[in-house]
Image 1: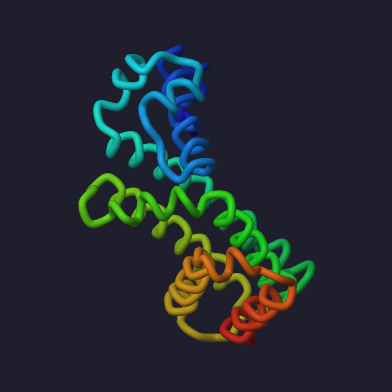
Image 2 (image 1 turned 30 degrees about the vertical axis):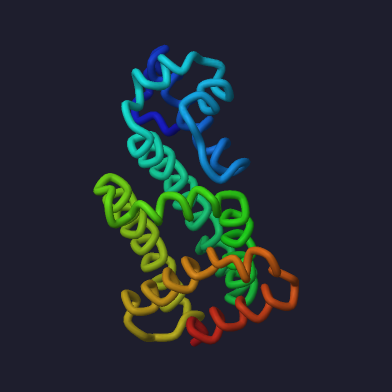
Length: 198
């Protein structure tokens, strides 16, 4: 779990972080979770789980929020201006596809479970929208810098960022995650390149 202060985390914060990680790990391993399985994985009692999460929906929303923070870091690391300037657009597009597919392979079940709850769970919707804004903002900054360097096409950075976000979200597709051969990864990276290339 991400801590927002420079103070050492309290025991309660450490316990909650262990529980969030245990929910993520349990979903990644089993596709679902229960209070008992999470408590066992976290090394706490089921009663402790219920202190922090009175409902399964609350635990899922918290775990999904953490998965989204990890996705934000993945997206920011994958699309760096340094890689674009040093290695070029082709290398950047390949890195974005490979890194994003690797992330979704690990977390696909978390996304499936959480996105199924999206219409009913405001906390999941809010986390998803916040994460989209973070990633879009980063994509737009890198695209604008790439445009100034005459590497990325001179089109609306907002439009290009939205297209990039839709394409990377589409990588969370069972067909891609099962069959992400070098050939498929290359084809997807080429598609991304075609959208961004100046």
